[in-house]
Amino acid sequence: MTTRNVWKTLALTSVLGLALAACGDSGDDGKTGSADIGLINAGTLTVCSDVPYPPFEDFDKSSPTGYKGFDIDVVSAIAEKLDVKVAVKDSDFDALQSGVLLNGRQCDLGASAMTITDERKKNLLFSDGYYTSKQSLLVPTGSDVKSIADLSGVKVGVQKGTTGETYTKENAPDAKPVQFADDGKMYLALKAGTIEAILQDLPVNLDHQNDPKEPGKYTVVETYDTAEEYGFAARKDNQKLMDAINEQLAAIKSDGEYQKIYDTYFAVK
Image (tube, rainbow, N blue to C red; front, top):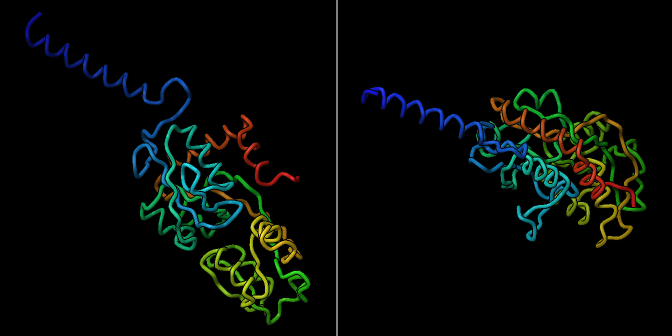
């Protein structure tokens, strides 16, 4: 064998070795790893979420991410399947749902009880739906407001950029909607009496109705079927990530992990 042929053989062996190594990145355990799914930080799924919004997302210093909730648990289960870590960023919902944060590469995924809408699809990629929700009206127990028909002239708390805000404007045109950046501030306003009602997603209002610190003080007086489905969101040019999210979302639904998480937060007890 000539020297030139030796070098050719060595070069070919090196290329084959690299190719085999690359093929082995996902391992034999079915996990994807962070290769080629467009993460802004390799090995970590960076998630933007508007906190607090229990039971979907809330603060929890004792958890690995510093957060808890249905969305956080579902994303964490998906990330485990992808063999990546999770980092959560507390973010403004309006900037998230508009696409500013995701398309600006501040995070890989939006997980924040975000309804899939045609308007949002203009700026974001959405996953398959992972939760079906209703809208609802929360008032202090004993309030004269018994239904959406009673909201004329009433100050109603709504979160900016949400479908709850849209529903209020479309179905209670004579109400006085008051915008808030997040549910935490909105609930404080209801307790302070600066607003008289909150119109938003049913599970969040039920969380306030069942608040152990304020037993019996607030009541959900009406719910509204809207066929809303929540989806996880990604930037428009990251179809590879969304395909991976959908694949693993289907996997946790199939193996029972999703149902286990769902029952933790929504099962009737």
